[in-house]
Image (cartoon, rainbow, N blue to C red; front, side):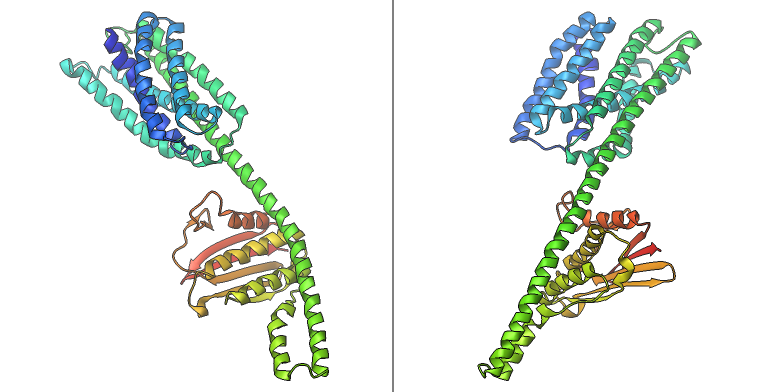
Length: 450
């Protein structure tokens, strides 16, 4: 092969394929300032640096160490240039580039399985002078199909969680190690099976060579799939652990918030009683008219009101939320048998009902019609079951994922934990949670078996 054939068919073609998969893995990462002013020169530099690499390949590509070194250099160059463009740690970029390499190699090996089988069946013997054209059509068709399939099966799941920016680096090391071994084996296969080929590469007179070649291809496919599955599993588990830590933090915050609310409500009640006594004294001295006294009493009545649920924590929580509802024209209707909830820890109970009511408040405060600014909350027991029901009106539409409504806020990563924390707490006590919408009303039902 001439130098330009080596560059065009091997180096540039590899870089193009790698670029496509890398773009799919990297697109969710944070970008540095002047990203496109960095990216365009980086791409030009990458293909320009491929020229001396092609020269090296032409001189030493027939040796195992030469071939491994060529692809190692291209991988290192690509990773460095990607890091220059993306505002992430080098290890994060290395992880994405490693996954892109695994995906590119997987697509190539799937193509080789198909192509080698066709050579064994002599399907290409009559292509004549159109051989190169048909070869490229098959090659890029397989490449395109693999890119689409990999996106839906692997890449989308991995990149969806990359926004957390925290990776399991032990898994990263294992992944890169397994990937390195796979590349080594692929280089050995490509080099020595090329020597065993007759007429064209991957065409064998001996059937045993065909079986060995396909076995090696299949083994490489399995290795690359394992790498991608490990990466997907690691990213998803890491994201779940981070979410669990956040939810535990939310519960701890609920405990502290309960103590603050308790102190605030008690202080308000004390002050209200003091005001009542002073009003009585002023009335007795004739310092205020009965009408003025009544008006003041009505004004402070809401702050002196108590909600009795049979559970001290819920008394304080409902009283606090009722004050907010009164000030914002929201009707909060509660029928709660709080005694039945004594089995729950303080932080869990506050977090459960606090999030439940806060989510409902977020929905109804966007409604203008006064008659629809209503929240109904009920806790009742029947036989061995304890039922928690919440209903509220809402505007717009509600989308659900995994049985829970998605947050309507724009920042999906910083919001949406409320409903997941509800389900986590319910599961902790062996309960079940179900949510659905009907006739512009959101329904949330929780069942505990006692």
